[in-house]
Image 1 (cartoon, rainbow, N blue to C red):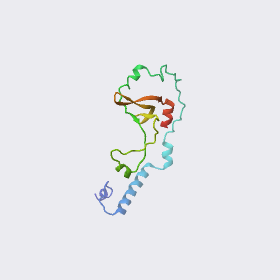
Image 2: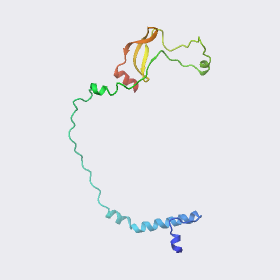
Image 3: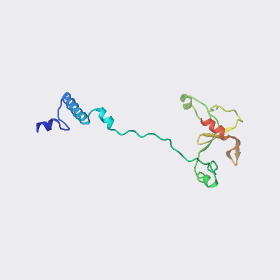
Image 4: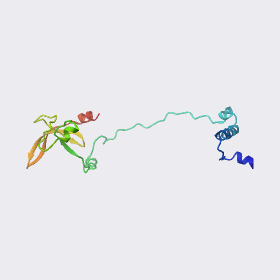
Length: 154
């Protein structure tokens, strides 16, 4: 019974050197059971040879790249945020805290210069501010081309 306690799976010893020696003995016994490495290598089956895969020729889809009305209907009800940017500026927090009613903040745009129209933060058009029934609006004067939008993204 003393021998089974020595080779047990979880020896309760506080000496790390004895624990390491017991683990080394276990590894030695496991490797001895496998036999020499040459015999294991000879017994292993040969690896299968790779072969070139053959695929059928792909045919272009007749409707590829063309969005029909039924495909556009899928995205028509998705909400987006449209905003008009009057201009931008950078100021220090000290200056920001000093702003009061009647303060003027200089922007990076000139008077009469077109405003940017953004959808979800991406520029899609430029326009001029108009007043319609006491409400501000924007008249689009220039729509950004899809290639220009893609260039700005990258």
